[in-house]
Length: 177
Image 1: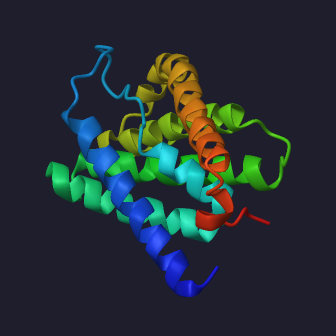
Image 2: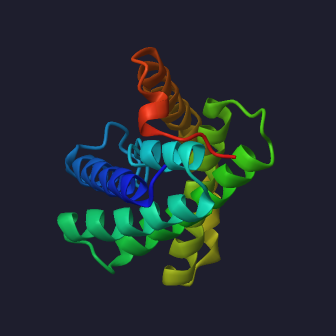
């Protein structure tokens, strides 16, 4: 893949992730529990880990969280810090599963990423609030990370399968490794 093509694909992924991040902030929360979201932008993060590498995925999440927060008006606020910390922890955990646990199913990686995202968010909340007791909220968050992680993982899997079925996978993406 040429550097120009890679840059163009990364720019498209950042734009898509930013839009998903912003759109999700506009949606009413289907579950009336603070902090529970679908995590649609994580579709792009997981896709980036699968088709590129850890460094590229990290670049995408940094840009996505900054642009998404800028669009939603939460840049450098508490929401941004929680989103950013969750995205970093999530990406690290998913990368470990993708690169070290080569046989891990996409949905398993996604569920682990969703759980790690919640852990990163609550750790940041504990730092901001200076209240470690907020970690008791973790079991409730983890309960919802399973279905949201499955949904995200299935969407990534369907996206990859569709791209392959259209005989465009090799055109757009170079598999990692």
